[in-house]
Length: 492
Length: 102
Image (cartoon, rainbow over all chains, first blue to last red; front, side, top):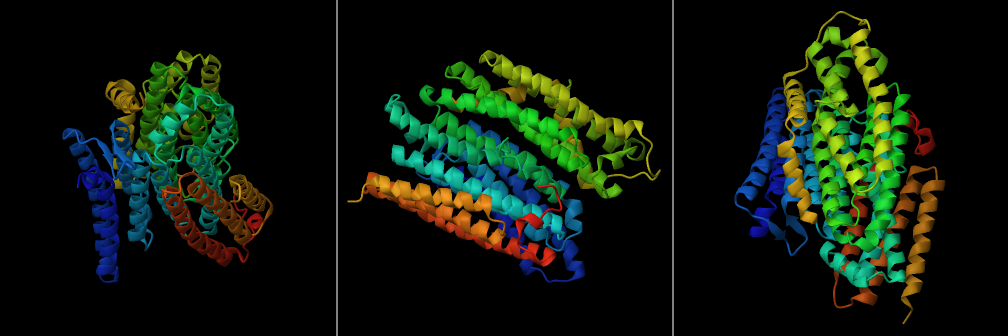
């Protein structure tokens, strides 16, 4: 029973998903019923999210932490942090999908898939066994493949095919790495693997095999985190997918991917013998991702593609934190907590940006940056919100992005990775050009039409939450810093 | 008994063939088959390790079962998506799926 209680946050989402599908089948098919169904599905989805957040809070209040299901899952500060983050993001995505749902017949399927993939993401953050990690990874991926192809146009189908084929290859790569980890240690539990790694004591043959497994794992999971050189799917999928799904991919899927990477690399492969190898690897990937992502973003004309490349650059910045995890323990925690903090801050910022893009793009019927000219005159609040989020992505105070960047760069400097921090700062300067170009376009250019517009209620609410959260973290970051420090303490 | 290395080499060859197929083939269906080859290579690895290293435990075999099940789900979905692309464009060639820059 304690197992089930500890699985509560995930179960709440899954039950809501099941109820939505059942509700859709049970109610009659008619035009009037469709409206009721949509409202009911929407309410059920939000109730599931609320239930999940509430259950996580209860787990904290009751101090119900520890392993579940014979050591395959764990409830600790790290998984609880991601429960809150992922459930919160899912709620925002449900709100942001309201306009999309009004245009499709398949709203029940859409909501159920979003909730099921959120379940997978939460399990990814809580899984401490290779089998559980693999199943959770696939649960979220398979749902996302469908969601990416949700629109009827051929662009969406193409994006979904590309995502699925590359995702399947990345799964195979991850599994190959896992197979060798299992073959070497004879165990699938991350703690058991960690014991094996420290007991192997630097035997050169074992170490070579471990490095091989590490490279395969990093390559496979690199697809999920969307870092160079495994980023080629990002722009196409971001452009082709429905925009709420793009936002979901760029925030939730990425956060879950980083959670898995931190679990595997810091718990199973955290031993000093091997961590120095992958720390260097991540440092190089971070530098290349930031530079390539930012340079490619400079030349984009489609705002979703631009945000796609920008998310590659941001993923590179997260990786700085992981690279900063050098052998010494105190730095290990600083690097890990900086990544967790960045993921939280980035979630608010990027969600805000994408929600603004959803609201603006559907009114001006275009994703082209050039068509954003003069939006500030037509919808001042949306333009201000988008501008604030883009400023936060650039890393200018008093926003969440600024604190997050300072935190990560500080971790890098503490770990003697000054060169990496310098590359990060330089990239921040480059990124200012393309982020602020959008802002300039909205404020300095003349609009194509004088017609003003407002976002729908649910989009407005989601937007307000995202922007408020972003400024709150920027001005008063202490609670999030403490939360991410206690989350990272799990790896201590 | 056949040495464990033979199985590992077999699986490495299968995995590489699959990888080559993914990179070289242009038909989405053939790419999918190549991915399957990679996944089966992984299954062989798991079963080999399970049999040779810890025959009294079933962890590796169970892992292989999970791999097979998930791969089946993935193929079902992939074929549906390929069919939809085919309806839109009358082709399953990934080179012609080029509305967006690849």
